[in-house]
Amino acid sequence: MVDTDRITGAARELGGKVQGAVGDTTGSYRGSIEGRRQEAQGTVENLYGQAKDVVHHAADSIAHQAEDVYEQGRHYAWEGHQKSVAWPHASLVVAGLVGLGFGLLISKL
Image (cartoon, rainbow, N blue to C red; front, side, top):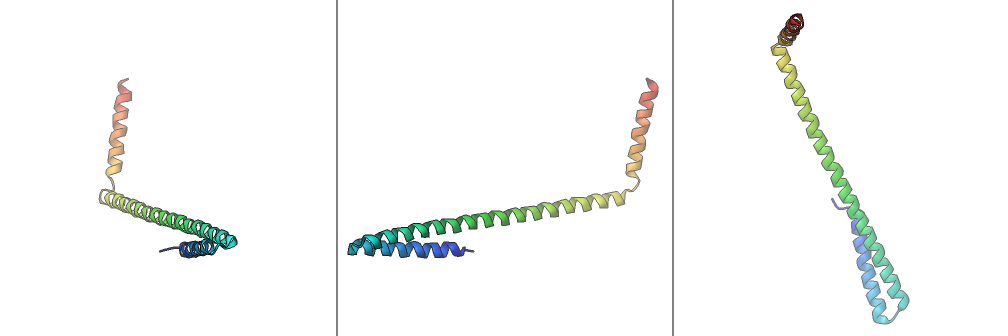
């Protein structure tokens, strides 16, 4: 999507070029200067619109990446939940074995 500043800036820049050229051709110093001013103003407005487009594109890209990361985290959390439901006492058995191992290690010291 093109920003309206880019469109109006390009139009103003073109109009300024034409006005400056007409001023140069007719020898009108004031017309030439006014045309150059409008051309510069149009260039700045066009560049401003381009910068806005870049920022919007970057924000959209970051938002999509954040959505992907969120969905991936949600998927992993669901998988972890499913595995814990499938083996509900496995963590208790592992904790018990670790405790038994520490107990045996301490009793030998």
